[in-house]
Structure formats: C-alpha cells, structure tokens
Length: 272
Ligand SMILES: NC(=O)c1ccc[n+]([C@@H]2O[C@H](COP(=O)([O-])OP(=O)(O)OC[C@H]3O[C@@H](n4cnc5c(N)ncnc54)[C@H](O)[C@@H]3O)[C@@H](O)[C@H]2O)c1
Image 1 (cartoon, protein in one colour):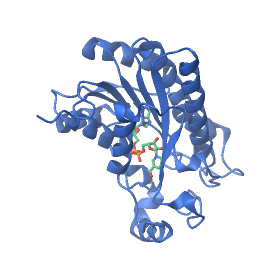
Image 2 (cartoon, rainbow, N blue to C red; image 1 turned 45 degrees about the vertical axis):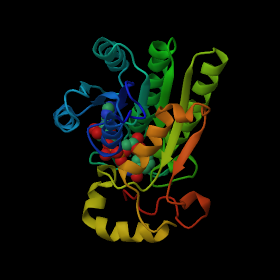
Image 3 (cartoon, rainbow, N blue to C red; image 1 turned 180 degrees about the vertical axis):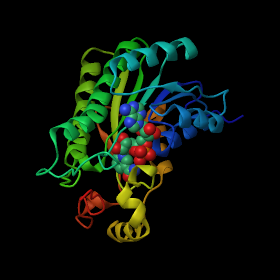
C-alpha cells in the first residue's frame, strides 16, 4: 500500500478555506496527513472540511492577528491530534481588497499600512512563537508563505511587500534560533508570485482580469500563471523528511520571473 509522503503527520494550515491554503491542505491530506485548516472565514472553512473529508481534517476558527486565537488553535489542535508536527503559515492579505485606500508610498494611510502588517507580519510572528512553544520538544517544520515581493520593491503594494520581506527574514532568525537551542524544528519560507487564486480578484482585477492575466502571462518567462498546486507541492517537499537538511532558506515559485527582469514588479497590482 502507498505510504504518503507525510503519513501520520499532524498539520495546521492557516488561511486554508480557499486558494493556496486550501490546495496545501488538500495535498497534505492526500499524502497521509491529518490537517487542521484554520481561517477567519468560518462559513467557507466548514465547506472546505466537506471537501477534505471529516476523517482527515477538522476546521478551527482563527484570526492570525490575535494572540489568543493562536493559543486556542494550538491547544485545540493538540487535544484533537495529540501533537502538531507541521505549521503552514499561509493566511495573508494584499491591501487591495474593498475597504482599503491607495497602497503607494505617497498615499498609503498609517491605518491601512498597519492593517496589512498586523495580519501578515504579526500573524507569522505569532505563528512561529506558538509553534516553537508547542513543537520544540518533538520537532517538525514551520513553513511560512512569503512572496516574490520579499525580494523586490512593489510601489503599488507598499505595505504588503514590506510584510513579505519581514516574513522571509523572520524565518531565518527562527531557523537559527532553533538550531542554536538544539530544537529539532526547521523553519523555511516559500516565495510565490502570479498564482491564480481569489487573492488576485480585487475589484480592479474582476473588471479586467482576462486582459490582465494575458498581459501578466506575457511577462512570465514560462508564459503562464502558476496554480495553487505549484505552491502546495513545494510545501509537501518542505513538510516531508525529503527536505531534512533544509532550514532558514526559501523556495521561489515564480515561473522564472526573478531569473531576469522581464516582469516589472507591480505590473498587475494597482489599487489606483
Ligand atoms: N496568489 C498569489 O499570486 C500569491 C503570490 C505571492 C504570495 N501569496 C501569498 O499566499 C498566501 C495565500 O494567498 P492566496 O492567493 O491563496 O490568497 P486568498 O485570498 O485566496 O486566501 C487567503 C486566505 O487567508 C484568509 N485570511 C485573511 N485574513 C485572515 C486572518 N486575519 N486570519 C486568518 N485567515 C485570514 C482568507 O479568508 C483566505 O482564506 C498569502 O499569504 C499571499 O500573500 C500569494
């Protein structure tokens, strides 16, 4: 019988009711893990469980910006699964959705800047802290979803890009801290871009998405956008023993964009 690559591993995936997070949860379940998908959106979270199957998954409400939610999620996860082996920190926002103002360095308000920082950066900071607390005894992996924006400036997603650089960097400090303390816990990040998910469907995107996808695809060396599964396969590798010599570093999933300078940062992401 086929033993999955993460057979009998116990996993928390944040931001997992749709998009990349759901795809990660689905692949890890398929590869033998028991997964707790968490999300701020309870209704859709429950629907995600129906698709994953109740034998393999259990949904928990979770706002990643709230410390008490992290404590609760880890405590409940341990009650349900006995232990947590892998935390995939996926939840994030772009600042381009309804209710946000312009995101460029000249017009971005302090309030909007902080909202994105709170969910993206503080959410990952809290996730890493609680993972160390609850996982350092038996070990495992923390996988933080950053972005290609960690490596480049994105003037039309100013706060978002700064959060992604912070996530890439805090991953390195967490990894080295765990090594220094001899915790059997590895921490890595993934830097995707241009993955076709609801994340890109801001109001602006909805209006012009076909045109924008075609334009973006022209700018990607591989000639097309990625799909959530492209990110999920990288998570599977980093979550499995196959990556046992990897910590403190990142995998870029970008169709070749960062290999050259063909795709301008921010070509599609405009709020203005
Ligand atoms: N789609 C891309 O091209 C792309 C590129 C680079 C990085 N990423 C990153 O990948 C991650 C997932 O992106 P996606 O495209 O699947 O996005 P998505 O918008 O489809 O999914 C994000 C999920 O996070 C949840 N969420 C939002 N705020 C939350 C909060 N405070 N607490 C808990 N959950 C919350 C949402 O409900 C949603 O389910 C994000 O961190 C994003 O920055 C995506």
